[in-house]
Amino acid sequence: MLTGVLGLFAAEILTRPGPIRLPVIAMFLAWGPLLVIHELGHALAAWVVDWRVAEIGIGFGRQLWRFRIGDTVIRIKVLPVEGYVRPAPREGTRARWKLAWIYFWGPGAEMGVLALMMALHKGDLFARTDAPLQLIMQGTAVAVGVSLFFNLLPMPFGTRTNDGMGILGSFLAPRAAFEARLTGPNILEARRLLMADEPTLAEAVLVQALVSYPGELRLRAWRAVCVAARGDHRTADSLLRDIGDPDSHGPALAAELHAARAFGQLVGGDAQLLMFAARSAKAATALSPGDPQNHLLCGRIAFERGLYAEAYASLMEAYRESSEPEEEAPCVAFLAMTCHHLLRAPSRADEDIARPRIAPDYVQRFSNALRQLPTSDALRERVTRTLNS
Image (cartoon, rainbow, N blue to C red):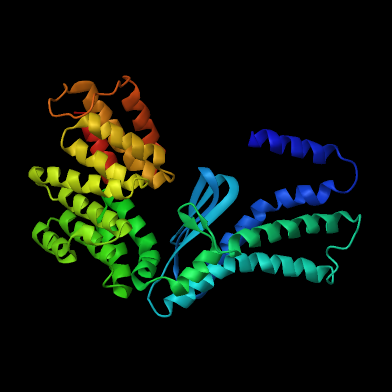
């Protein structure tokens, strides 16, 4: 329906005589360039205060291109209607002011574009005119105004906040919530690396953040997982016990701590711990059902337990919810291995769900998809060994 309405609107504009077409067309065409300017404003503001920019996303939907500039991952997606920047502090000095500064300079960059257009026309930008260039700038100015309204008026957008909410939250959020916001990019990067069987790189990311925020519970919990992955299970278990009961915290933090505990038990190398890992992973999923990382964790634990039907269901849920190639890659890898076992292994009496119908070419399809996705050599080698067994 929305497509039809937009189509009728476009037809009306394109068939209407007179200069009204130019500013309206310019308003829509300017959205993509303004989005780029907006996100670059955030990124440049972060670099000015010496924060690391982990990731810049331009657009929404399927990824078209992915590349790096230094340590920053740049993603270009198919629909230029939204974007994001994931900054992470190198140290904690004046962090609230710096985060507010970073939030402001997305809209601030667009204000700069508007000020430049106003200066070029000496304050008469919106005067009645038939001059094509001025009409184009008028449409662009309207696009800037719409963007500033929706970005600076404090309001939530689903699970995200706009820049106005971000600026207020930078000063008003409780300390624990604020530190969780700052360390979020580090946690996300570490979890992706752990799922790709890269615990050493994951630990390096977490250690860097712990220098500034040594008391942040999520950082400590995932650092314990890295210690377990190195083989020091006794120390890892002690670190996790020191953090305490996950359910004594709010839902978001409890979900993260349950997930860390589950992953620590998963990499512990003890098959008897996998049952407890499954319980913790399911608790994390119940508390944060929209997180594909938790569904992926449930699927991986079920795979290691030999519950391939359960693994397939969780992995497919994670695959459907994943929006980034780094999240898709481990889903695809374990789906390929799971389908391989489902086609070969007989049903087990302790499986709680019915086996899915797996076509013989599913293994090859997932294997081919994995070749197109970024992941570690260790995970690729494990998939190859499993499929050749």
